[in-house]
Image 1: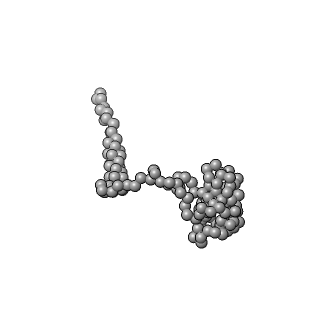
Image 2: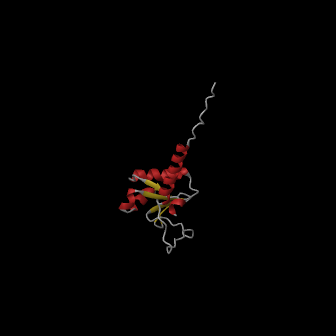
Image 3: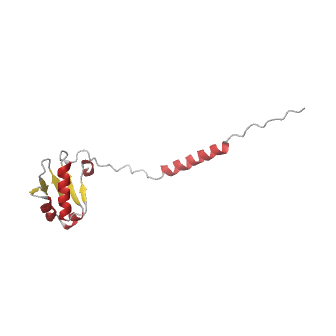
Length: 128
């Protein structure tokens, strides 16, 4: 009786080659997406900027008082009337960190009743 020789199982070399090839293509593409910056360019630093309110923004203090362009205004409706035409499209509110949510909603509702379609709340991260 003859013994049958068993063939050794095939190794998955083609699958391994495909994976290595895909990794090679990925790194070639990813490495060329952003060209290198010129050496003589110095980037600005924003760590020392003052947090100033944007122009035409309605500032709401902790006690609920409203200021527009540095002047105190009696209500959100009056403030909306004082805004420029371009600023009325998207009214920007800069609330104090300690302002209550109830007061913020009241001011927002007053602005909506005055005619504001879009109200944006400016945060600390958005100002930088």
